[in-house]
Length: 255
Image (cartoon, rainbow, N blue to C red; front, side, top):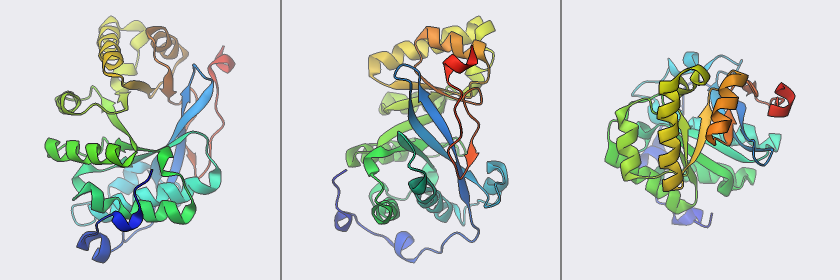
């Protein structure tokens, strides 16, 4: 990550925008690499300051405070992750409809990381599933800008809608997360197996790594592992921990 802070443009939203009018915090859930036996990343998941769930927090987000909320999530994720010395990468969700211009809206993230001495080359920016993609070309521009800055990029809930297929045709991220609807019960569902196998084949050819998200049973895990999935996230391995790193149940412990 070699973009100097003074080289980043600024805008009125960053300079004069009102801060978020309610406080938030983060929980962290690991993404494990079963091939290396290590933690690949931790996803930062928004919570209330008393641990209230994401739904409670997101219910307070509207058009008026969406930009402030997106900025607060980025800075809070870094602030809460920094003292934990978390292994692997830090995956931060962002709301594409809150980003006016990638190069300006990233400025607060750079400033926060610099103050915390947090390496920005350990950050993944993940397109959150909380918003519909209103402007696909704009999102592609954001993702391309983040890649140019040196960040890894990820698409969440892949397979949940046609927009993600259109996005993949225009931009190939470093990572995709399979939609948990495709994961649920995959061990006993041939249709889901065929869809996921086809997705994995396409991603291999496009050099995209795949994360199986929302894995809850050992049978789901074994089926996906045998298909060639190496990155896993879900309650089977660890539930999100509020402002902490959870203990992980590794696959060998599940036998």
